[in-house]
Image (cartoon, rainbow, N blue to C red; front, side):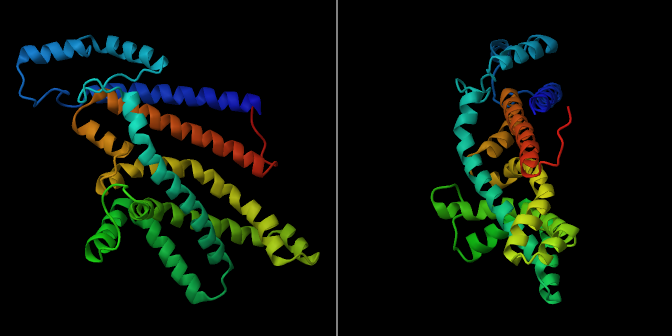
Length: 305
């Protein structure tokens, strides 16, 4: 277990290093600069570039950024003087995490329920309706869902707030927008694995022993059916993080997604890099945790050294 975790951590660090390197040089290839279009003189712009070390050779800037990053310093925002990227992330993280965690739990629980229902129901009409809903959910981008929910429940019916996170009801539309696709994907996975598990020999043996259906369902079928679903949890976290970019802008949520979009529009190099590093680290850590959880749920899974 220790060797496996160490190997995965080292792989994650290497992946993060590659991500930082690629992002650093791609950001510098963007047209314009952080101070363009601000109606300032050339001498002032030169002074700003010198103050932020943008006049140094590109490799020197890269080395300086890596050294600062190793000390936990992600730099200072070019567009928000005096505001560090660390503080900016700390300020925007609660909004993104609150919506993301609720969406994640809702997706996992509701998707599992729908998948089990789809696998267990005998009525062909209900099965067809569930299949259509799941297919629709997989095919619809979350920003389309967000716009439809905003127009229907926020503008036409006026039932729910559509701006910010001022009260509990404000979470409903963003959470539903982010959850729509993960719910459908989770339901599809559970339906497939649950149906397959129901036809296994160990389930037939459990029924022959006279075990009650709820015990068979939860102790035998569901435990084996949930392994692929747990594996999908890592990519789900990545989807919710990246999906929040558009959703947060649609619902005017002051989170990481909105800050990321603003930083790209403003050519705020340090913020783009800082958010990329942070989100990459979260995704890598989530995938590592998912692998460990899979091994705990099913001891038959062998950890490779």
